[in-house]
Length: 379
Ligand SMILES: [Zn+2]
Image (cartoon, rainbow, N blue to C red; front, side, top):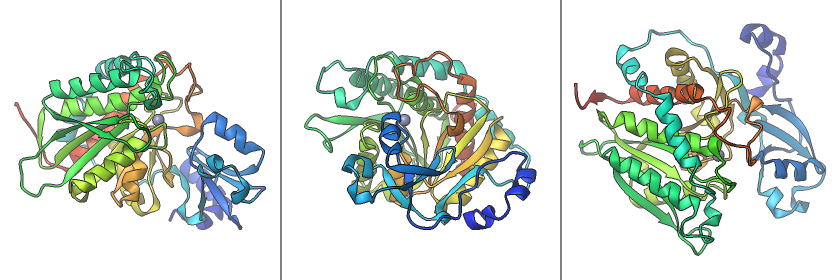
């Protein structure tokens, strides 16, 4: 249904049915490449050696004017060849609309936009949060953000681990991992992840990604009031802005501990607080498009968000889990109208929308409530 060839033959049909135009991938021949970064510096470097053939939301494709092997390795590393059938960026499928479940509404209504903003403010104001700056100062913003998040999880009653790794540097970088066991033998687990590091500009990275890591804290806070029949794992990932180092380390360490095979699915939040049009992109790979459409249906049931699906996945902490075969999606702002301060010093708390971010947290809680049994700890 989402193959580009069949959609490409029906642009007018879709225009009238969907009520909005969105560009369809061309029926391209030869090798096309998906951009694995939208960093402004990378886009500038790439512009001289490529031409764009498709751009919709997070999904951008180019043709190269020189062979891939002739590009500098750092440019080539951010391009991946794609086939037309992998690509979709547009509204989630609309199915039969069910009624909202009062038990799910009781959970999603607990999301507090002010508390969410408070978490994001505390993380943003730690200074510079690039993992690459860890060696500059023991009191770096990155370490302060780690400490803040670890303490917040502890206060909520979770078991907290500093999940340290040495993948990239001699210095240790750490993810902060909070866990709660279901108490049932052989229980499956759910993982919620969002990166806490930034590109390293002073008291910036509010949207990217103090917002998503605050979303992880807000979900943990609300779920601390419920017993679940799944183990819960919350991860504030590090080093995302340096090739998703923390996310890959996390997936590898969960594999070593035997937890990865028990993961039922995973949710990533990255850049959830800039809103232009109320659209959320739910990004995954083609094999999990049914999950993404189901998530889209929950968005229509439990939030004011308009769900779009983006495929294939790239460039954030959902990728290591997708590569491990775990059903995973990224929830992210509509990239077509994304934050103009992305990876800039002006990515500050001002002009962000915490009501929109709260809607995304509501959606991700509705997903968990829809797939697990949650019982209030206290009546
Ligand atoms: Zn990010």
